[in-house]
Length: 158
Image (cartoon, rainbow, N blue to C red; front, top):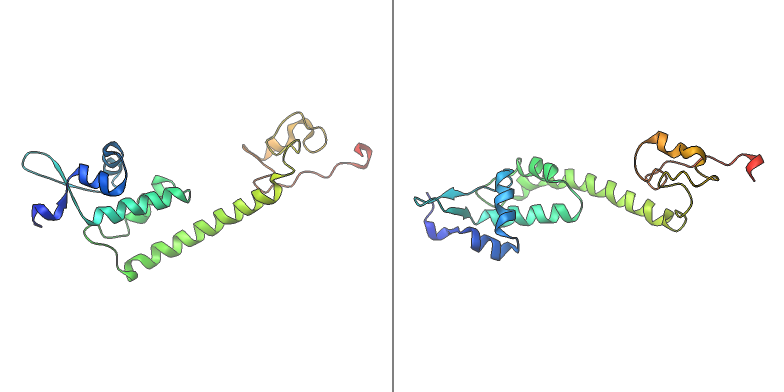
């Protein structure tokens, strides 16, 4: 077993990571990080947990769910920082997810100026683009901002 001085207390991990101890306990409960217990029952974290916490925080900043983060972390070692070889498959999976998110944000940016009154939020009040709340038939949320195309108004409506 690694010497106790090579481990971090929960307070040290919190201070180094910038997270509250309650968040670290929650991450541990979800299996995102792990600790060992001292004879007195105190948590001790391997220094590699700093990278795992940083990984979780970075993932959340780009919109990944904790479930997605957990799946990625399950593919990485817990007792040391991942090597380039260990990291590569995770990075590739994230790149696809981030590319999709970038595409969604670019679409949102292009359409944002015209969203007021266009029915993108599936409002019943837009008789031009969303008569009878037809956007709601495609599902919940901002349908036109999510990529659905509003129907072309009939010639009679012009």
